[in-house]
Image (tube, rainbow, N blue to C red; front, side, top):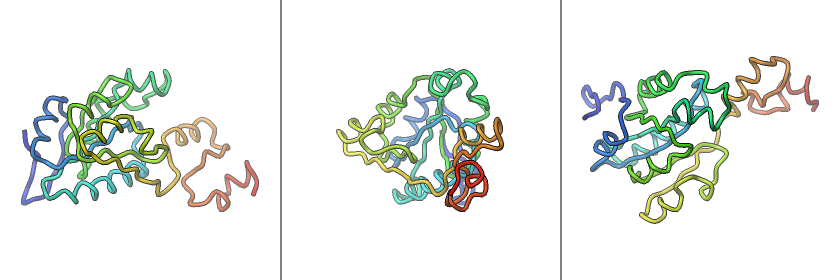
Length: 191
């Protein structure tokens, strides 16, 4: 299994099994992240861009592997109305991103089994985590891996997007840089 490459430019990643990802990872600097990634938005894209930059510090053949929660895992974590987008569509979309090399679906509530099997050099999470609260922190520390938290560029989330669809008049910490400048915020919360 190899990345699809033309003159040094990766065209697309692949959705693979955990076994295939472990094989692909051998001999490569590897960065891993995971999530539901339901309704891909610009916050996700920013996260993947930053993670790719981090991966590229490991060399030209560095890999970014993304774990994606299955539909059953997502329902347990997010409730019966999620995911909005099927697991196959979410995984396929992520694999199409130029920043992503491999995508692995998983059924567990956490990616711990993936972290144990992959032993990434770097484990990355987005906002809402600290190095101490990241699943697999102890394992990463035990073998010398690093944990990196990428701060948000904008306050955007799938849950907020779904909230705006349900109630367009409510403020869901929308994509403004500052709530004080947000007309919707002023209408609902006040200055």
